[in-house]
Length: 200
Image (cartoon, rainbow, N blue to C red; front, side):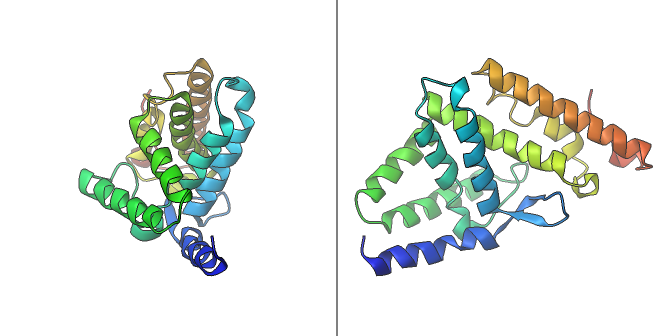
């Protein structure tokens, strides 16, 4: 890749640092899309011993690129995203990937197709971690940043995606315990019952 094309893509990808997600960090600011992707890659690297048959480098690439379309569309919370917005993000991904030379173009097309199909072990690991990272971040954020629907939503988010793996199921259960403890702590601190309801 020539230097100018390389620089253009790197400059474009900086939008992922600027575009923020619905989630908040533990020190009280919105996290960026880039920060979510970075920690997701970290999580993938650290679960490699749990999945010796998986190509963890491929999982890490999925984590790195999965939200690249949000450089164009911005982040839309999962509980608000509809099919038209998913289509817009898919078109943005295609535009971005098509702007890269070979072999990056075809490699990334294949990677996104694999993520969409959700049939390989690598795609399943990526998707489960993607869901779990969002819950981890919510659990680290101040409870005041949670929307009312999230008290129950965070307990079921990613439930289907973890079913392929006993380790992921256990991790999801741990995050649920932490979420419940966070809400109970919020109630004890004087949050109203209406804002701190959580499903059993």
